[in-house]
Image (cartoon, rainbow, N blue to C red; front, side):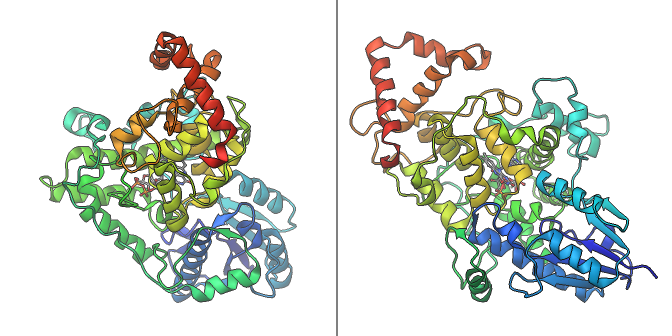
Length: 513
Ligand code: FAD
């Protein structure tokens, strides 16, 4: 009987995949590997590397327990050749395999790599779907063929219809309204107590020592006695339960809120288990819907819709944008920004309190919620004209959930407008006004949120106007941002000059901000 080798990548831990259902087949070997090729392509947060390896190890064990044959390469295995290709070649040559199969990678980089690898083999090979996403790779591109912008709202409504999510039988949206965004923009007022973050403590000292011994370079910190992230299917399901019970009721209302006194508010922190496929997107959404059905008085529909939109809408949408526009997307730089990322992105040592908190907690937990990523660090990087490649490398490394298909589309597209407006209809930038409206950051800050220039003027204020002034040719024609240019034109010339000079001075001394 022929023997088949099947590759499972670290973000393909989907136990419900058809590969693993049914009786184990003795002619099939599953291979998972911890390789330097993956730890070293960007400087990753130490918790991200640990989470991937822990999840892969647990998954391999789950497969073994179910009776499957598994070959696992730990990072320090003397037989580990440290690249996927070298390990696979060696296994195929030494294991007498006559067929190679792999699951469709989510990253373009690995898609090309494995296609080329498979094409070079002398045995037959095939690529299977991961049975995770609600859309196929080209679905979004097909939906928007010929269009300059891909409206997320149009895509989202199609997805709701296609999957019958929050729909009436007659094809109308449940409650008659598609979008509750307007109800989901409250500042955190302390009325609802923020739930204690649900964590999954385990000791990771041995694995950490193994990484250090192997010389894997990482960023950020970890508590080796109490690693916090869910890394097994059971933990991921528990995290989902905790979220629907404790986070969902206020998820919508405080979705955009930020506070210096907490790192995750009412957010689900399900992105890691979702992205490595420990959880399925429809399973997550359906569980939230069930909770809302059981507790309609506790969970406003706006909270449920806001959550469903993120997963059925944004997550699938970003994946579609990625596959429609890679590999060119990774080089997009609409504004031609080329400044180096300031050193404080790697330390959190800045006087801007919002940045201190967003970066500080990212280094501590490998996590920041969406508005911190978009309106604090992303906003600053865009206003300051940082090279999108540097911004991408930072986001790709630092977050627990960062995998290129969802990182780059959010970073280059949504946050840096480097695609010129494919994902977002206008740049997400703001002065300190927005920060103060949505957070308590400005209160204790070294800088004065009300000042555009002068001593201790908040850098976001002058940089905001500098950004619009320097990109007037590209942005002024955009009807969605006419108001900014109206204000700039009406601004007293001396005020304008002082504001732009302040921005120049801040950019000159950016490392000291
Ligand atoms: P919640 O707020 O609880 O949202 C629920 C789920 O919705 C998330 O788990 C996620 O799966 C999905 N979701 C929400 N917003 C988005 C979005 N914009 N795109 C895709 N899915 C979304 N998300 C990643 O998974 N990986 C990344 O590398 C990543 N990089 C980002 C970079 C920038 C600059 C920005 C602005 C956003 C990025 N996001 C990324 C999207 C989003 O910020 C995270 O998914 C979210 O913060 C994860 O935390 P959570 O699980 O608590 O999310």
